Length: 182
Image (tube, rainbow, N blue to C red; front, side, top):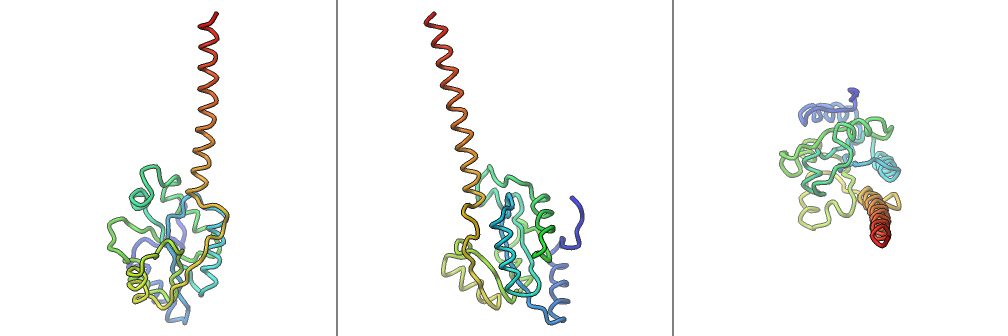
């Protein structure tokens, strides 16, 4: 992985960057997620998040965190590549890896963003919304920005592969039966 000045190594370092930008009067925006198999919906989402302020910080779930939330087959793309990919997007100012061991809302607490950008699914429960609203200035909820999600795309690929296996298996059974009939 190439080292990018956008990649922040710790919550403490991120807090210092945020402090410097606040002293310059910048509006800080935070969003977070898995960012597995980055696609056009992610890019659109991040561009819209950036439009909410001056500095966009993106929290990236660690591989362990994604596995815990989405299951053992995820993520598809390892965390080092997901981090690097996000550093190449112009809307993103900083990225930080979110460790599974961090306490709940640790990144939000460290940044105390002026704007927290999320999807409806992220903070759907009222108790979570109330807790988050106490930490950040404003919560902006964005709708999906693509026709399919990464999870949906993975399911389509799996379905296509299963269909191909089914076709090949049926053909193999037919061939064996044809040989048996001879």
